[in-house]
Image (cartoon, rainbow, N blue to C red; front, side, top):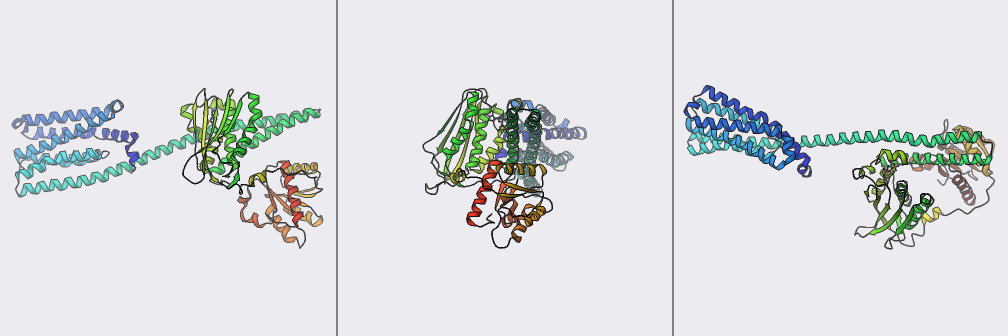
Length: 595
Ligand code: ADP
C-alpha cells in the first residue's frame, strides 16, 4: 500500500465513487424486509409508531443513497468533503436505525416471537451485504458493523441470563470476525484499485508513446526526404552542368545535404544507444570554458546571418579544469543553443555557466541558455524532454528537427548526475537549465589529455604509400580508391578478405585498410590470418573500418592484430590523418598489432 497514492485525490474520488454505486442496492434490501414484516406480523397494529419510524428512516436513507450515487459527479465536484460527510451519516443512520429496531423488537417480544426471528435473519443478511459494499472505506465499514450489532449486544447484556449472555457473546464474536474480514477485503480493494490505476497509466503512456512515434515517423520521413531531394536534384544539375564552377557549387550543396542526413542518422543511433543504456561517459580532464567557447563559436555565423546576438558567460567560481566528458557536454550545449537559435528570430541568446555550492563530492555546475524566441506553451514544457515529442507540429514543419535532441540531452545530463528543465513564456522566450556534476582535477594532471587529442597534427609531406583496400560494397570501394588516389597513394582494391590475402601473397603493401563486415572472410578474420602468415620482420599496419564501436566488436577485435580502427562514415581528411599517423608510428617503432 502506498500512503502517497492513498491520499491522492484521484484515488479518493475512485473510492468514493465505488462506495456510492455499490451502496444503492443495499438501501432497497431494508425495504424488502419491512414489506415482509408488514405482511406477516401484527407489528403495525401493536407498535404503529415504531414500524412507521423505521419505515420512514429506511425509505429516506434509501432515497438519499440513490441520490448520492446518481448525482455523485455534481455533488463531488462541488464539495468532496460534503459528499463524504453526507454519505457517512446516511449509511450509519440506516444501520443504527436497524440495530435499534432489532433491539426494540427483542425487548418487546423476546426471542420466542417470529418478528424477532425475522429481524435476526435480516441482520444476518444485511451485515455481509453492507460489508462487501463498504469495503472501499474502512471507517464506514467499521461504524456500519458496530451500529448494526452494538444495540443488540447492549440489550442482551442489560437483560442478562445465560441465553442473553450467550447471544451477546455470539453477536460480539460475529462482530469481531466481520471486522477482521472487513480489513482483508479493504486491503484487497486498495491493491486492486492501485493496480487498476497503474495499468491505466501504463496504457495511457503506451498510447502516448505510440502516438508520438507515429508523428515522429511521419516527421522523420519528411526530414529525411528534404536533404535526399536536395542530393538527387543537385546531382542531376551537376551532371548536366557544363561549367566547372557551377558544378562545384552543386556538389557543395550535395555535401551539405549529405552531412545533415548523416547528423540525423547519428542522432537516431545515439538515442537508441542511450535508450539501451549503452552509453558510458568518459572521465578526462577538460576545460568547461573551452567547451562553451567552442560551442558558441560554431554558431556565430548562423547567429550573425539572423541578426541575433550571442553572449557567453562563465562565472569566476567555475574551476578552470574539471574531469568529465567534454564531448557529451558539448553535444548537450550544441543541441540547446542550436534549438535556441532555431526558435529565435530576433534578440539574443545568452549562455551562462555557474557553480552551485553543495557539499557532495566534485563540482556541481548549472548551465543556462536563455533566448528571446517563440517560447513554449506551459502544457508542453515537460513533454519536450520525452523522445519524439515536439512542442507544436506546425512549428516543426517550419523549423524541422527530429524531437530527439532534448530527450538525448536530458538523459546525458542525468548520466552526469544532473537534471534538465525549462522555464518559458510563449512569445517572450525560453530559458533552458541543466545541472551536471564533474570531478575536480589537479592542475598538473589536467595537462590536457583532451587538448593533446585535439591538437592539430603538424602538416607533413604525404608519404608515398601503397595501400591495399578491402571493401565489399562496390560504391564504397570505388569511392575509397578514388579518395586515396587523389591523396597520392597507390591503391589496390579488392572485394573481400580472401582476395586481400591473395593480393598480399603477390605484392608488398605499406598499409591495409579494410572493412570489418565482408562476405567470405571478414575483416577480423583477415587480420588474424595476415598476422599468422607474417613471419618475423615488419608487420603491415592494418586499419579496420566499421560503423560499430571498437568496444562492441569485443574480444575478437582486441586479439585480431588490427592496428587501428576507423569509424564510418568516412571523413577523408580524418582518414588520411589516421593513415599517415599509423604509418609513421609503426615505422618509428617497427611494431604493429597495437590495437
Ligand atoms: P527538435 O529536433 O525537434 O528540435 P528537440 O528535442 O531538440 O527536437 O526539441 C523538442 C521541441 O522542443 C522542439 O521541436 C520545439 O518545439 C521545442 N523547443 C526546444 N527548444 C526550444 C526553444 N529554445 N524555444 C522554443 N521551443 C523549443
